[in-house]
Amino acid sequence: MSSVQNNTVSLGTDSLGKLLARYAIPAIIAMASSSLYHIIDSIFIGHGVGGYAISGMAITLPIMNIAAAFGAMVGVGAAARISIRLGEGNKRAAEQILGNAVLLNMVLGISIMLIFLIFLDPILVFFSGGQAGEETLHYAREFMRVIMFGNIVTHLYLGLNEQLRASGYPRKAMFIMILSMVICTILNPLFIFGFGWGVRGSAIATVISQVICLLIQIHHYTSKKSFLRFRRESFRFKRSIVINIISIGMAPFILNVCASLVARFMNTALLEYGGMGVDDVIQASAPIEGGVGDIYVGAYGVMNRVILLFIMVANGFNQGMQPIVGYNYGAKQYGRVLKTLKYTIICATCVTTFAFAIGMLFPEYVAALFVEGGNSAADQAMIRVVEQGLSIAMIMFPLVGFQIVAGGFFQYIGRAPMAMLLSASRQLLFLLPLLLTLTPQFGAVGAWMSMPIADSASVLVAATLLFIQVRKLKRMEREQLFHR
Image (cartoon, rainbow, N blue to C red):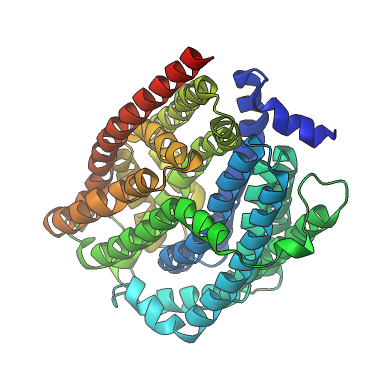
């Protein structure tokens, strides 16, 4: 039996604390590295191109989220099903899922690339609400043209990394993501500053790094030493497998799409109403060229990068939980499933509580990382807006760790409807209506206020659904013990 086979079997026997550390730490390092790269990328762009380039990047964020939503749907859905099949001892079925996931990502990656490239300008105008300045749209257009050409690579790279973790290679998945970040970090300043390619250089660096990492993944899955491998017979679409992948993966798909819609309306609202009470926040000594709203959009982009870093770390624990929960649920070891859930909630909540402390105590230092405040009045203004936004948006952030883990848990045990509901609740049911209601009345402050209110409401929904599911699993555990 190979070491990886031992790793997958140990999911049902080893200490849960050790297992969570073994799978979560590589996932955390990988996710944090990815998020840190996006922060570093923004710093390079902010210092090398300017504040309006950051605003352009903020416009592209919801568009990239929608493209990523399809990849996440396949990657997470396939990983969850692979873990459950391995728990049942069915390796061949797991390899069939792997092959179908690759085919799905190829079809979706090419389709989305063509649609977004053909309709890029109308899409950018839509996601900016038709109110972004031409300079902001120019940067967004340059960046997205390159990113979309590499979309199929992004889908395959991210999807195969999810399956690496699920099949017993958490460290390899970590090293691949770190490698991608290192390559990007090296190429970014070279392309942005050295070659003078601006935001286009940042996009080129991203695509090159993902191509290199994808080649490493393909080598892994074609190697005879790998536990799960590409097999010719697995590369045939099987309806039942595709339906299962999509049903489980629909939750992260909805989450990403809802996040994109929220980002679109957030950008629009900030462009239109961000300047309300502007004198209270922006006290620039010189006139600001371009629209004040663009400053708020850029600030929101910076805030998103910071918040995403801590969400990624919390999600690292969530991803570490996935193979443990999926395997033990498939093996009907419900006590281990519940203990893993408990440990993961505690860890993720500690992360988001630490993030809350950073956002409350040091917002000015966080803001100053991204923009050179002495360069222009616009840059100074953006720093002040970021300070204000973080101190409001993160008020209820300690609760977010629980909500993240609860949503992931329902995915990993195959409860697609509950996972979809939790994915949609914060963004679509709460945040979007609050954003559309509060921003016209209170300007940017209303936009920032909508986030902690939505966090609180979505946690109540998650707690209710999780309480019901935990009671059910405890009952199943008791029945199982009774029949032994």
